Length: 101
Length: 388
Image 1 (spheres, each protein chain N blue to C red):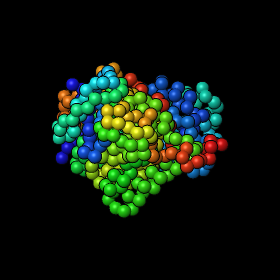
Image 2 (image 1 turned 45 degrees about the vertical axis):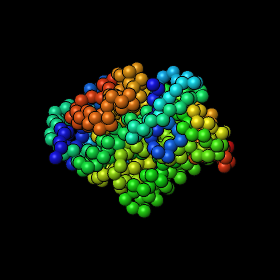
Image 3 (image 1 turned 30 degrees about the vertical axis):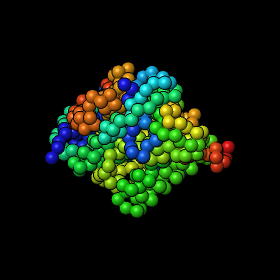
Image 4 (image 1 turned 90 degrees about the vertical axis):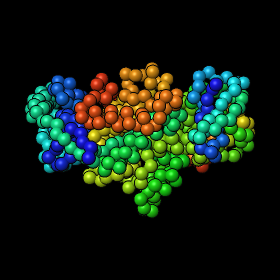
């Protein structure tokens, strides 16, 4: 069984520590208390990368460690691969504020 | 009371190493300094790239950093290699380090008649210093004399879930034993500063934490681009870290859970301060390792996931690897395998105790992996203004 770790109750992503996780793979999500959840991933996900545990609409915040790590840049579905292609950082964004370049 | 065996210095500090430090007071003296270092046993050099054609605040910063490095308890004696016309205050550099009571020599390349003559004179002086300190013996000292520096580099998602947890465990343990701990990487507080501020001992310290993060974020935004690729780095992103917020939340885990006593400037020394402190530094290795060694830290605990191998000339750096695959590939650079936490083979406390036993051995003289192969040549000093 492929394991994904959920750090905090509020988190809507979990981290996968397994090689060759492919679209359609069944994943077991565990939290600190050992509680289990099962989901099917929709994409190939590399070692150490994240999977969505819930549907996250565009603009909504993404939580890991119980804290915001950015916002969804497109609608994300439970089981989607979550990374720089659909997660936008909300900090140090000189491109949004304009700068001296 | 827990003890280690170290070198008791005239100013009361206790070192875990006994090096002759060759300090070029300007980048232009590096080649001469390097030739001396290669010839004389027991020497290491700080080959930075600063010290001239910079604005006065940066020149002062470079001088202060070099002084702090010379005052490190791991340094038994110092040879300053000066060119003679640099912008750093090479006289204050000599006088301040000499006032601590450790042997210091200084040579001037221009006065001595050029590179070859300076190398000859420098070898003679360094030889004298090396022999003078070679007979120093390690004596018992309380562990409360120790400052541990901490850092994570080449992070991936295992860092925040394994190796940083181990270092956090050690940080709490050392603070409870009365020692000092210092962490930095202000860029990697962005998105996690509210958690650090909650741990500050006072409103004023919480304010300092928000201030340094705001200054760093403003600097990052000044070029008008998204910071991603700069921070998180391409390696961080390949390792699964999607944003600076995610990187920061994992990074601060290494500071443990104890109260934060205050914020130190880049050149400041620990100078008897106890407990957990922040030093305002960037995240890049050459600059942060220098800043951390300048606090007077006897050693550093360094967490990595992708595999950052480098150390520092006078500060042993212990590499704690959170990624089990990286540890397998890079065992000759990694001192400890915290990847066993990810695979479920060991708990944070188990690896934490193993790390604690290893750090005691390192304080007593055991070499770290990067120390043994001399992987510590690229250092630098964090400056703020332009080269002019």
